[in-house]
Length: 195
Ligand SMILES: [Mn+2]
Picture 1 (cartoon, rainbow, N blue to C red):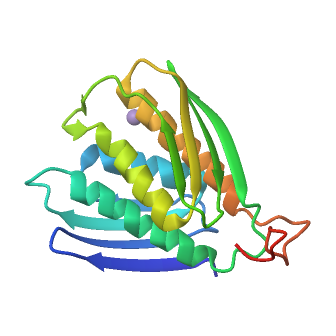
Picture 2 (picture 1 turned 30 degrees about the horizontal axis):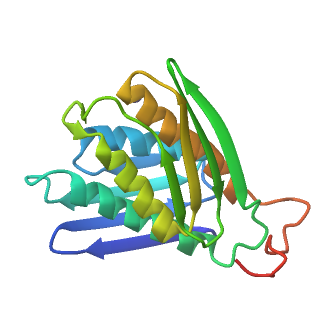
Picture 3 (picture 1 turned 180 degrees about the vertical axis):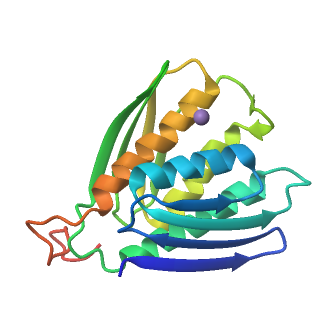
């Protein structure tokens, strides 16, 4: 069973995350941050990873802690659900177009966290959401999920489209990477024998 449940509580946020890597993209996501929920819905739907995410954060200050800590908890859940990573495809990539926007994601479930974030969101806000938090989320997700995560924007005019294309590109790449390789389902995909 490639599932994990993470509960995380600090003075700033309280978060619970439940995921199933072998799901169908079913989600129930309530973080108290509307645009962020919309993005996490995309992440689940297009990775086919079932996600139940509940967060209550200090959004009276701003959305920063809630978004970052959700990224931490979701990354921890991914790492735990992957376990020894036996049989996974490990790598994933996607070029994702959405209207004016095109975002490319290449990722490696390497246990070597590294974020390349070459994305320029042209407006400081999407609705009431601070656009700089998109990067904060992926930084936390990459660090705690052990993901080498490269995200590059190739085109884009509209911040909502660019952000959504980024989430969908990561989702699609993740779907490919967590998939079990039918030709090598019994081995960890590394010449070192461990990831
Ligand atoms: Mn949208």
